[in-house]
Amino acid sequence: MLNAIRHSDNLSGYANIRLHMNRRTFLASVSAVSLLPVRGFAAQNALHLKAQQVTRQILPQGEGATAMLGFNGSMPGPELRLRRDARIAIDVHNALDEGTAVHWHGIRLENMMDGVPMLTQELIEPGDTMTYSFVPPDAGTYWYHSHYISYEQVARGMMGPLIVEDDVPPDVDHDITVLLSDWQLDETGQLLDAFADMHSVAHGGYMGNFARAFLSQERVSTGDRIRLRLINAATNRIFPVAVSGVSGAVVALDGMALSAPRALGDLELAPAQRADLIVDVKGPVGFDMVTRQGAYRLAELIVDGSNTTRHATSIKSLAPPDLPTPDKPAQHLTLTMMGGAMGGRHQGDNIWSFNNTSDLQADPFGSFRRGETARITLVNDTAFPHGIHLHGHHFYETDKDGTLGDLRDTTLVHAGESRDIICVFDNPGRWLLHCHMLSHAVGGMRTWVNVA
Ligand code: C2O
Ligand code: CU
Image (cartoon, rainbow, N blue to C red; front, side):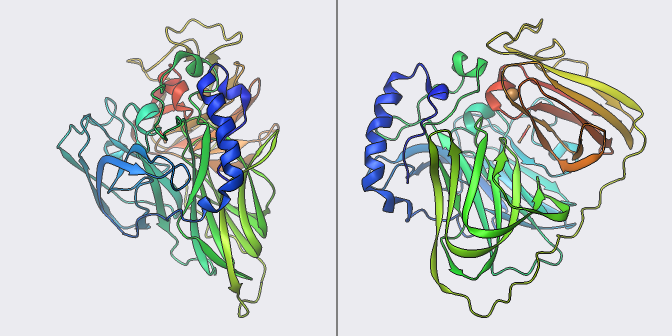
């Protein structure tokens, strides 16, 4: 059901939204069916992306459509499917009336193709086209999004799935992308223009009063084995997700295959994180955000008939990614998240900082020799969770005794927690390291590293 999110803590101070929520909550009870007509992603293998204004029906059919930004006439943008180890070129044409740049989140690509204005490229000015060319080395689930005033351009819809296909795809009946996001909408369905509102920047960030998931496909059959590629494309919201009507396993996180499938429980996806599942369909499939007030339906897959030819076998792991093996760390650095509301004292000159320094400085946070292994202790000394993203690399999360855990490009560190990550810095260039709560990034929580 498309009802309003009742996270009162995220919405404090927005009286108009509260009113609005009550109406929506009521509406939702009579318009559950309105979730059904959600169309999938534009069916194309476009290697041309046109950034432009689009109109999208986010509210139930019959309610106001939302003026947004998107690609190729759609929001989310088209699902790009790339072949692993093959060079591709993607032309990005800017038909907006402001600059932009596109980041290929999670792809270990050449630095100059990373899409970060001021660090790796000039802005793509209105009317201009830039060709991004790279070789994706790892099969998996990625996404692309604007990296210019991203707290606003992504919130307006500049995002899309980026899939790097497996050399040998797993044996599934359907491969379905599930892109999650949220929006702050008014009564008429228009986005509220509060993208960099100070109150939300200093707290959990700009969050929507509506959330939903866009599916690349609407129907499955009972007995199907399906792959689900969940992508959290929200600017700030952590999605706790429960998938109902299925049984199966998590097979990859942030694009990278797990060495063994992991039993499927509730998932927690920080902004930018992905999870790939392989599951067997038992009945109608629901995707719910788990909230203290209960389940909030993000999307559902309709079940049509049953698959009688599939014989369920055990779920196998995907092919392992080919990443360098970490050595004994040559450096141990500490990155302390500081600032924000509720006690976050620090000496940075913006709302948030890393190690008392806000925003990008002339000097990098870390300098690494190409191929060097480093340990970085991430310390969250704030009252909010942060999803820390390193560009151009994946790193290992580690557990308390230092054992290597999952490979990720974005790691969620809850308030008061700390976590060590181990990274082989093998990709030369200047790489951003920032909080992927995009309000926190614009509020100062970003730095960069140099690999030479
Ligand atoms: Cu998803 Cu700096 O990026
Ligand atoms: Cu943050």
